[in-house]
Length: 139
Image 1 (tube, helix red, strand yellow):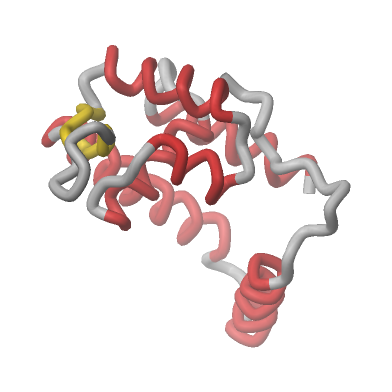
Image 2: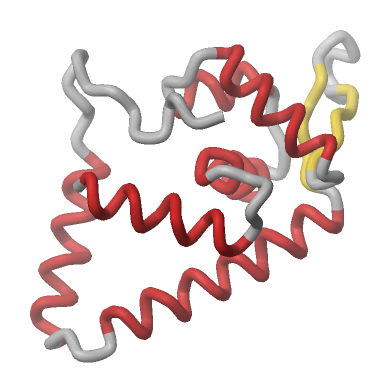
C-alpha cells in the first residue's frame, strides 16, 4: 500500500508539479459534485479544515478553483472548477488512464477483474477509527 501511495503521489507530481495528490483528489471531487463547500471536502475526505484550506488556497492561486456564493445561502462560499481547472483535470485523468492501461496491459483479464473487485471492496468498507487517511498530511 505504501508503494502504491508513493507511486500515486509521484504520478501526480509529474502531471502538475505544483499540486499534490490531495489537490487532484479535491479537483476531482469538485468536478463530480459540480462544486461544494470547503467544509464538505474536509468531511468527505476526513481531512482537517486547515489542510483543505491550504489546498484550496493553492488551487485558487493556480487559477484552477474559484469561490462563488451559494444560491441558497449567500453567506456560504461554493468552490467550483475554473475552465483551466477542468482542462488540467481532464488532461491528468487521460494521462492517468493511459499510465494504468500501460501498467496493466499484460495482466490476465481474470486477474484484472479480481483486482478491480478487491479495490471496490476495499473502498466500500469503512476505515477503522484509528486509520489515517493517506495523503492527509500533504499540503
